[in-house]
View 1 (cartoon, rainbow, N blue to C red):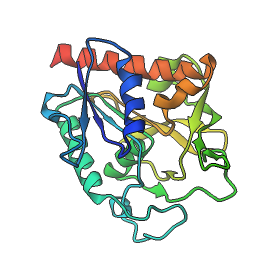
View 2: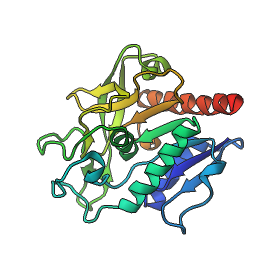
View 3: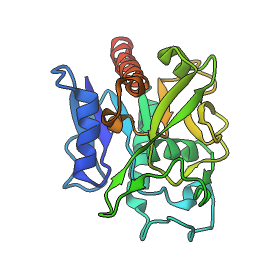
Length: 243
């Protein structure tokens, strides 16, 4: 199977996604998809699935906001990436390909389908923000999530409680009509989305956390990460069979 992963903008972070999905499996080929030709390593037309990776804030215009100045905003938005990934997502849906959205990827999926954003989580809310040491090195935090019963996420994890990592200052606000929340943090921040009506829809899961970086934590916390990867890859296999 060939899986396209959008380029985060940072090579080291990109390797995390590749290593997490591939894990030395010779049956998996990874294609890096980027709005920048020098970083683009293949064609999406050759891919069997799409992973929308994390990275810079989505431009506010994508959720009909005219507020371009807010705490934690980037020095410059990357509209070229937004437009590129919008096209990829639309093509993936048109081809009925499995899609996995991670952090920014989840936020992008939500706004492309009509949802909105919390532009910056309250300053007092430190649960979702990374830890920064004296040398400005950043480290993920870990927090609990409550999984909604009856969701695809609950089905693949087999539990209603899990631990995930976190390093984000934005979050989904109003959820797109076609989507539903499948998990929330203890302070009610939306941590996962999936299709509300799964009928004739391709596999889609979106996670606000970073499963590709969960290797830093213990085995109990890795359980949800293993389940997410396994379910996604199985969806890709089944998609190829029925294509």
